Amino acid sequence: MADLSLDELMQLALSAALAGGAELKTHFGAMSRDSVQRKALGDYASKADLAAEEAIAAVLARAGDRYGFVGEETGTRKPDARRRWVVDPLDGTSNFIWGIPYFAVSIALCDDDGEILGVVLDPLRDEMFTAVRGQGARMNGKELTRLEEKKPEESIISLSMPIHGQLKSMDRSSFFRALDAITNETAGIRRLGSAALDLAYVGAGRLNGYFEDGLSHYDYAAGKIIAQEAGALVTSLSGGVVKDGGSLLAGTSSIHQWLKSKFQQAETPS
Image 1 (cartoon, rainbow, N blue to C red):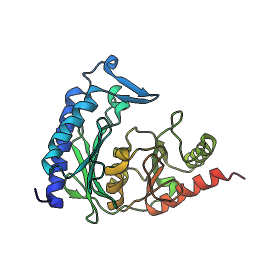
Image 2 (image 1 turned 180 degrees about the vertical axis):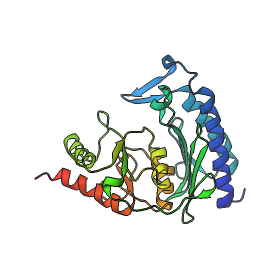
Image 3 (image 1 turned 30 degrees about the vertical axis):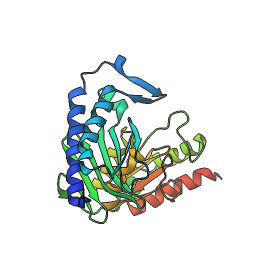
Image 4 (image 1 turned 45 degrees about the horizontal axis):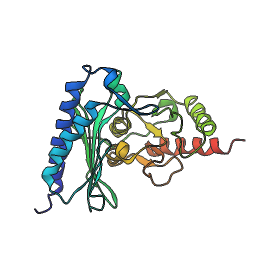
């Protein structure tokens, strides 16, 4: 089977996201918390996660067996493939379990140079965020406008509040020193609960910045390329390359620089 074009691969990813989203809508609000598996403190899995990932994988399999697959629930297949699908079928599982309507399907296609394309679907609001490397970002097919630079006091910043053991890039005292400094100078702080959707919101200009530590690639892959293609900078907290299991900092150029400086100052307090 010949390689599919980028347009064909994007259409496949869109179909897969819709299939996964349909499973999530079926289970949302209709699931007992007793049926939820706790993988670790603050880390859950439900039958909805697995059902959505299976539905997504079935659609993506139409691309042929030369593509690898990395899924949060079912693991890795063909890890040495030149191109790999990276899937989080339900990003925001805790929100989903507790009935909070903020979660997403996240699908990215990656190669050794990074993310090629990304799709983040909010199935409850019917908002599909997409991006292709070098081709910009869109929501429901409409191109996202380039991000507007704003001052910190005009900006809403989102983050993930770290649970025990999540921080990988700095100690808790440094993290919370930075958070305190950021909180004192922004229009507001939000803890929304889905890395993929938060990054898509940065790309859409709904959030001006976002940061988290201890993220897996499937958490951020699709959202990262959407934010980048909309004009955001996405790096580690220190400004380096984002790595699987490490930290992530996203924002417009000025907000990214400002946030990065707060973390640098927090690690070298006066």
